[in-house]
Length: 373
Ligand SMILES: [Zn+2]
Ligand SMILES: [Zn+2]
Image (cartoon, rainbow, N blue to C red; front, side, top):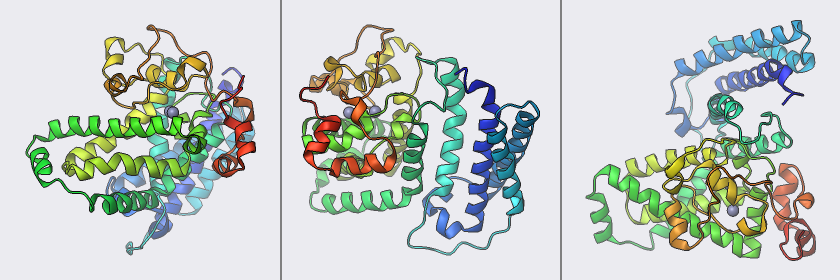
């Protein structure tokens, strides 16, 4: 923390400046860079105000860092990026009516999601850290690359998941059961949907841990050595596709209303980030009712006794039913995070994406469990 703390305004300036450039590019190439589903979440006016704020903040923070001689190079990136964003049109950038395109990227989703998640979690992790570390801790670039990929490819992931669940759900239909579920009030459908989805998720999650060829992919997620809001983004693309399909399938087959499913999708987005967050908050008895950071941190513990426990992402009840619930006394946190043969996991998104596909001997050297230290 001490090393990077003095340059926080420079880092923030660079982050906001670069996001502003990406934001202006979204206005210039909306067909290509923004997704239709994501555009329904915000208005043009909102995006322009946010862009203006980003540009001004990048200028102010960057200039003040340069004047105080703190992280001058990084601050210069922020100021120059903000200048580039203005040259490209700034917050008043003109754009033409958006044509329909068969496929587009979710750069707008990346910019908005990164901005708001960081806005919430960076300050509270700073105040309530389990172990204080800078947001720019080791391997933050790798995890940011995962965050970028999973957001930019949002439409591709959505199409792939919807297609696979539709194909399978067309083969099975339980009209009586669907009618019964649809007759329930939305809030009850939501509670049931969370339980059903979490059960499906936990069963698949346990399979990831127990089937060696699936563990190869899931080991990427477990290779994070630093837990924070960004660490949970480290998931192999194939795992994202498989997990989302398997979790959505029972919700589609059972006929839950779209309101209940949408509420579940929002909850899973929030709780997946929260579960990894570097937050030492004591949730008391709530730890037994809802998955909290401490619950999922123990799932990531680099400790032989805690390798295969706490698979749930919403409800500890699911682990209690599966016999995989284990939570050390209140206030205890893992000493270390990661897979057992941690030092051999490759670094960087590309090497980690290719890792599961490498020859068995090489893979065993990475994350194999036998004879590990
Ligand atoms: Zn796991
Ligand atoms: Zn995790």
